[in-house]
Image (tube, rainbow, N blue to C red):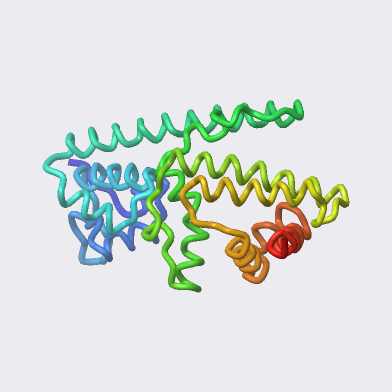
Length: 248
């Protein structure tokens, strides 16, 4: 049987020596032998286990979850078969997302809008969790609010909301760039329609609540930057429009 040193494993797989040491430390990948000189030695079983670990890493499994998954597998073939199915599902989602972004580029270059039903093809619950991860971690850390636990992810509803929000934001950006005042009838109508949509989407919203939301988006650094990165002044403009609408 052929054996490999940690350096040879690193050269063969592209996994750093430091990572292999860490895998050993946490019991995820233990060498089959350690020499008197302290060299870690790996055999074919360890190579096969490392391959399975790397497949799980491609699927964004945490190291703890990988360890649990490998402990629960009855055989290598069962593990590989399961990983094969998960990777195929990911490839299908990625192919769909790639197609959607390619179509988005084409329509954007033409100055045209895509069909709303086509804009979020490929987005499912997994993608939404990833898309909301940073914002959710921020809210959880700073306000103790975990929106992924508080709100059920309904993919179709979230896709519709994303389309509407994108259209509303695009309108507000264009109005701001064009120098249209926040008090303008068209801007106020857009705010009204946006609030109506939110209500129709099973979220209780009125002018006062929308004003509070807009104030939060303006005063909170993370959310203000989300808007300001799209257009300088957008957070202030949307708050001004919300304030004027609430005064009616």
